[in-house]
Amino acid sequence: MKKTVKFIPAFIALLLSSALAHADLNLELPDLNLPDLGGQANVSINSATEREHGLAILRKLRSSGQIIEDPELNTWIRSLGNQLTSNAPQSTTPFYFLITRDASVNAFATIGGVVVVNAGLILRSDSESELAAVMAHEVAHITQRHIIRMIRKAEGSKFANGAAILAGIIASSKSAEAGSAIINATLAASAHRKLSFSRDAESEADRVGLRILARSGFDPKAMPSFLAKLELFSDGQNANAREYLRNHPLTLKRVSDTRARAKRIGFNGKKQNTNYFYMREKVRVLSRSTKPVPDKVPANVKKYAKALQLSQRNNDRLALQTIGSKSRVVPEAILIGTLLNKQQRSKETIALLRPLLNIYLGHEALSVLLSQAYISMGQRDNAWRTLKVIHVSEQTSLELFEVKQQIARSTRHDGEAYRAAAERNIRMGNYKAAISLLRQAIKSPSSDANQLLQMQALLSRIEHK
Image 1 (cartoon, one colour):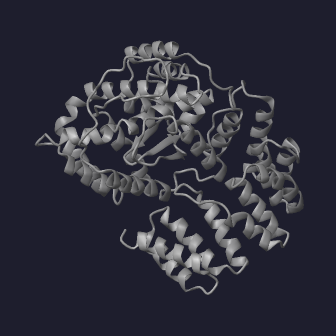
Image 2 (image 1 turned 90 degrees about the vertical axis):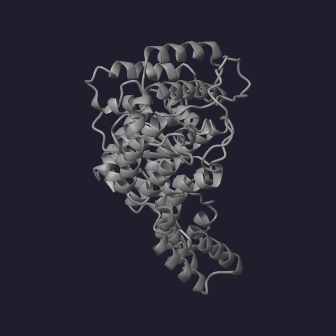
Image 3 (image 1 turned 180 degrees about the vertical axis):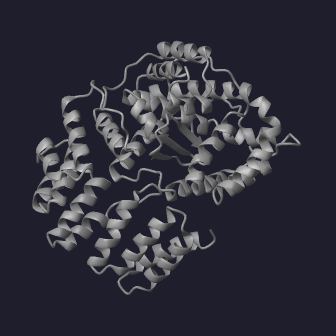
């Protein structure tokens, strides 16, 4: 599985390095005289096929075990990504945002709207705007259809044709080795052309990304700031940063152009979101990074980071003493609730989290912890009501489905328990297991007519996978 995770970013980087695209923007910002790099008509892969292969790659990544599946981090990175995509040029594909445990400073976008950000890149960023700048750049690769354009351009070569590249994409979702063999053979002959194309694609992704960044309320200067930081890493002594530089070629002109454009756009956006600092520390702990907590973080975030580290070492009592037992700040409350639940202080968890969940309706991490506290108190119906109202999506955390399965079973909603297990398997691409579980769910007498219709529709969608 690890081979698959390493292969996909490298593969996507190779595709992106051979892309040409077109900038078609209308984001109510000053005209920056963007060049037209080519039309958007007549691409090789239709939208439905693109979405299908993106979904296959997403599920393969999630099944690898290298993606951080924490409900709170999932909610955070999706929220940040959604802010950007809502202000991006229109895309025919949905977007998916994931965090991997990888310590290297890298991020990549793939066919079908999948954007993956490495833990190492999050830890190297100094602000939410810097992280958003990298994500906006990757979103731009997708909206400008760089990968699809590369496939179309390759169709004219007798050595590299779009059909063979697409075959590699499909094969990579099933076997990293098979996909790699097809793609490497297909692109070897055109490798000498990739540098000039990659500069075009990277420059355009910077320009479009800047517009997305500014329109979303983030500081455009964060993009040249992060690029300048990467330029300092190019001395070869920063192994973790070299991966990003290999996949995203950096030039002095690119840095200076981005800085000039950011200055012309200006910044009238929002203040720094402190939630970024909390989430960066959670990424640090869950990715087992040895990098220390930066000095320039708020005092309450330092306290949170220390308590989180203590909790990971199973020193829960000292962790709770460090952070305290009450907070209205969501990341702090989630950590406190986790610690209280582990110490069987469920009544305190309920008192702490229920008011917050009334404000942040459907919040996955709050709902999971509150439902677990209800179960511990013997309040099974409250536990089930807390979870059943959550709208599930392709990126719903795997942990939520696990907890939902347990609570559904304990409340005798056997059909929903089978369905939760099936949904979890679907999101990892385990269709055979999911089909078996859905058939059991449909047979369960606990399912009502509406639930049966939903289960049958879900079964129909995956039976042909």
